[in-house]
Length: 223
Image (cartoon, rainbow, N blue to C red; front, side):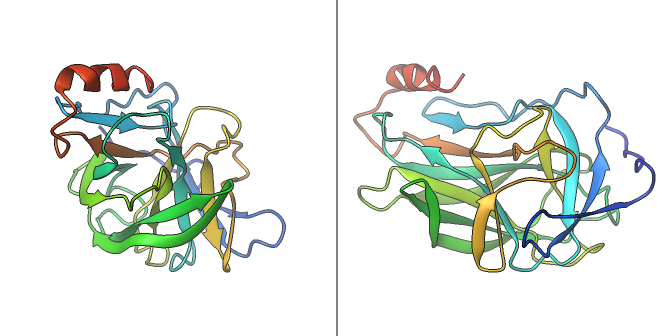
C-alpha cells in the first residue's frame, strides 16, 4: 500500500480539557479496507474497530502517553490466555521508519482502567507499509481477571515515533482509552474518530478442555 500524503501538512491538535498532550494526525485514504491477520484453530480475536482506518495519530511528547481498548471475557467460557496483540500501524509516517514502542496490559475494574499487570514490553513493527502487526504476549491472565486493557505507549517523541490508528466510526463506542498525566480518560481527538485499532488474540490451545469446535462458537460472539 502506498504512503499517504499529509492533509494540509501536519496538523497539531490540542486534547480537550486538562490534557496537555499534543496530537499530530495523518488522514488515511477514504474507503481503504484493511484486512486483519487470519485466525487459526484454537484462537479468537477481540476487537472494537471496523477494520478500516481513518486517521493515524502520534503524540508530540510520546513517553508515558498510552492508548488502550477494554475487553470483557466474563461471558466467554475459555482459558484467559493472551497469545498476541495486533496493532495497525506502519513505518511510512511520520519519519519513514519503525522506531519502536511499548506494549502492556492494564487491569479494568468497575469500568475504570487500573494498574499495569503485564509489561511494559518494547516492540517494533515488521511491515513495510500500513498493516496489522502482530506482537507476542503469551501470558495467562491472573485468576479471576476477566476484564483488561491491552495498551500501546508511543514511548518516543514526534517525529521519531510510530503511530496508532483509529477507525472509520464517527463517535466513540466507549471502549477506547487514553492515559496521560497520571489519569485515564476516553480516547478523543478533534477528528471525531475514536475507536483504537488495537486487537487481542486469545488462545485456547493452552486449555485441553477447549476444542476447535467450541472455539468456533466463541468466535461467533465477536463477529
